[in-house]
Amino acid sequence: MYDLFKNLFDKTPCSKNGICSTNPVLNSLEAVIVNEIRQIAFYVVKLKELNLTNKNLMKESVLSLSVSVYDMDFNKDSFIGFFKNILNTKNKVKDFYLQKCKKMNIPYEVISPIYEIDEKKLDITTLTKFGEEIISKFYNKVKNNIQGLFYIIILGCKITSVDLIKLSLIKDDIEEYLFEILRLLSITNNIATREDKLIRRIKEFSNVIYKIRADLDFEYSKKYSKRSSYNLSCDIYKGKSLLVGGGDIEELYDILNALKYEDINIYLTHSMLIAPSYPAFRKFEKLKGLYKTGTIDMDFSNFKGGIYLTKNSIQGLDSIYRGNFYTSKIIPPDRAAKIKDGDYKTLIEDIKKLEGFMEDKKGKSYQIDFNLDNIQDLIEKNEDKNFLISLGQMEESEKEKFRDDILIEFLLPYETEGLHFVLNKVKDENIKVYFTYGNIYVLNTVFSLLEKNIKEIYLKKENFININPHIIDSLRDNFNIKIV
Image 1 (cartoon, rainbow, N blue to C red):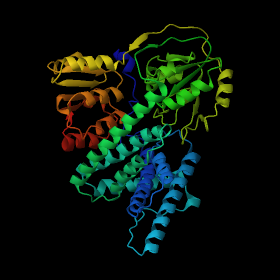
Image 2: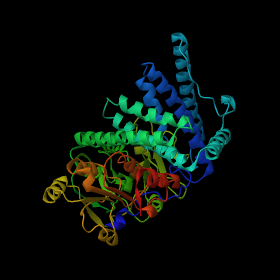
Image 3: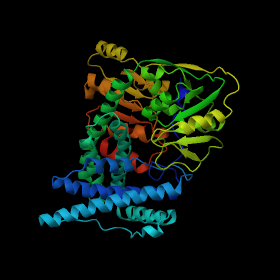
Image 4: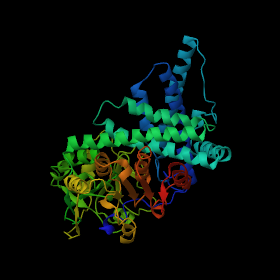
């Protein structure tokens, strides 16, 4: 089974911030975006203190926070427009805050800008220089131990924003979550914040991450039916085809609905493997299974048809050699056609013009197990024993180190529903959690456990190569995470 999951994550090294390519331009642009949104967060929190809230403003801010660029092949005009929208939002909320303070005749606080912006001269080069200035100031003025905590906060807020935007599509009551993300992000405006306060706030936010993930799993089960085991096919079928990747299963469901009467076969990348575990997805005859030829880059390069990246896809395109790309990403790759408002008409028309696969080809088949009744039975038979929850497949040598513990193994490394199920059935102090794989989503699952009284949490360091080393050091030093 290991060969099925070994290429699940984008292995592009990222020693700078754990959320994008090592390209310094992308690091700088990411820094500029986060800088503007955390200022918005500051004013949102100040308005909350005056009993003034605006759900739409908070949602817009969190949506912006969820957006990232992962390779240099991005649409520059889209990025500039995106930045201007954020800037406009910041100026509006700042002006509104100042007006209210003056009207109420109370003291007010403002954040001094790091740079002065002339919108008429705004371009990628200018924004890159602004970002370099932000990063330089941060590294020169902030101690290493504080840097790690700041990175945990920013990364935690960004990835939780992605989950919350997904949740907002199927649940209305999210205002408290929106505010909690912005409240935590706001603390990063003050680089002099004490270490103990940052640790306390991260632990508090840990519960927010956990609750959002639990709500998302619950809402998905309601909408798509309770998850169950399924057989995953890697067969190829003759005909027109579409490959979908990115992890946004709501978008996948919309695509399957839109194409259900079209003569187009739909395949998934590794990032979509959670979808078929919901029975509602398996009812679509056109959903054929996993397209897998080797590495992720090889899959994209060899696919005979259209390739669709969902809104929150983190797949970089740097090393992809060919392909007809479509996406709903807010900042799309330059080579990708933008799909807006769920209108797939152009996508369908284009795919019908592509060659598709010329013949059937038999591939491997995998049994993907997800049966919580079996887990329940295992727990009941081993009451008061210690349990080891492995997220991802453990090697035999690793299992031997925990031979006295009852092993519960979830093969999908981004799994949370199974983890939450066990946490609700077993005392925290009787649980150990072992993360065998690592990317930013898995790391946010680690963050979600920091307030729990779990006996031990292990990270397999060699598989967390994409993550800022300051984050790993901080998890070890401040939260007692075992790095193995």
